Length: 406
Image (cartoon, rainbow, N blue to C red; front, side, top):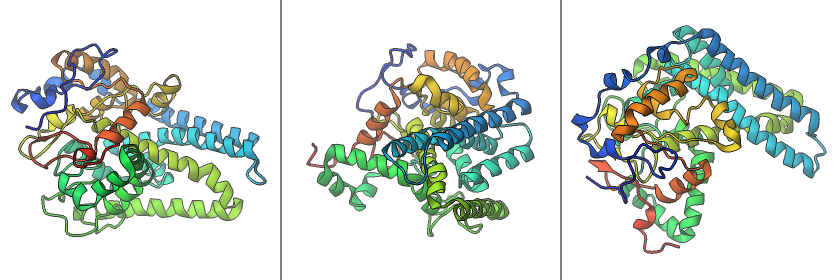
């Protein structure tokens, strides 16, 4: 077993604990509680869906989005901009991007069956909301389900599956790191993940699994748009087609808006917030599963419960918890979300209270109380690769391979 750099406090004092727990990795996998045992600690009502509450969340997010758009329309110029307009549009893009992420999270809940108990309603709402944000709904539903079924699995895990030592050496990342230094490379990691990570994942399956769903090696380019992409089983072909139809309709709507209102108006009202939404969705997946103190597992060490328990909860308490509220607590209840992905997000806060009470005394609840910026910088600076794809592997800094660290 590859041990972490330091073993953190595994106590249950979540207010003072400065590092996440590691017991899920250190305990023999056969001694971990079962999913059923963990579920028994959560009241049954936390698993009950409500269509009115679910739809109310869609409306709530829509009202916030409309408010930000109306405020920008009333206060900011699109043409003949002055400095105050440029600053105003930048602020608008940031907050509108956060607001749109609320709809993104709800569509993601639809894909899990966590929005309502009705599959058809979930798929209609999810397809509409995700398509509006240029997300191929059914395609991502499939690959994201694999992310949940193989959490922190070094061979089959989806999204933010860490590079191996050979990967970073062969790609020349060590030389890049030496050239730009530790701080520069951390900045490069932030840009690569938050700006380019999402489109590269959809188009090239970057940071995806190391083998196909059927266990076969990857021999072709994988993407989320072609019905015959090897990323999906053949039976999913029609659903992948529907996903791409949704993207095409969204593109047509954007094109029509551009023709009617102009490219600049569409850019400031939609495209710049859209980029912030992409940043948020990548950030959540990245931070909830990546830390130098939380391992990834090879075939020989991985189990479903062990992988799920190596998910991390974070507070996202900035601006009085606005982001956590706007995003339906997806980051602060992510452990619960990975253990029970069809549990309604509007019940996740209550469920997490019971889950934490059960897991924390056993040292099985991963919580990192640091600010979002602090955690983001730490991960960008320290988590670049793992030694191998076997056993228990902790992320390391690329500068452990370099002779030149600033």
